[in-house]
Image 1 (tube, helix red, strand yellow):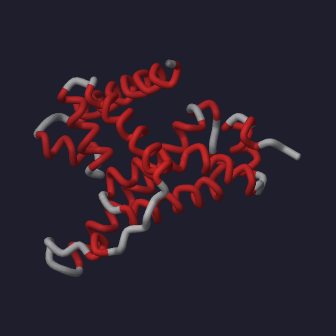
Image 2 (cartoon, one colour):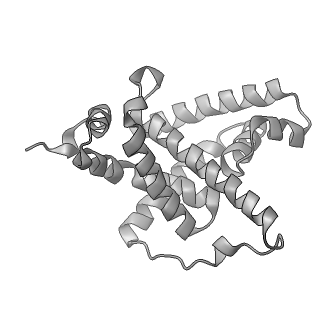
Length: 191
């Protein structure tokens, strides 16, 4: 019998691509807290964040074969899948709000929230705090680009227009900020 807890993330993704549900469960246990934290922060709704988290792991189940180690670590790929899903949710919510009710009325915000176990909530809060701490170490211009892109769901073109800056400047700031965040979080993991 395989002990999934000792397998590396990359091996788990290979097994998920082959249809191994236990490998998906192991990946879920490792990363659901980080994925939920990102979704909760960006979506500002527990219920919608929980649904988005489930959708992320469904996408991982369906697309695990598309992961390539040459493009980064499994955690990076998983968080990228999460980020893209959350951005999709934000954009669909904007479209729905523009089509239906007045701007002040957010139907999704009225959904009842589910209760989260205390240990899970603490872990999510710690992960969110790590990210906030790493963000605070970035220069203000880079923080602004990251906040607009990752937490407001704006594209780089939309950010350039909003800030009145060239697209190339926005892209450079985003790239540098992500490199610094990656390094900061990697150092934090090593400690």
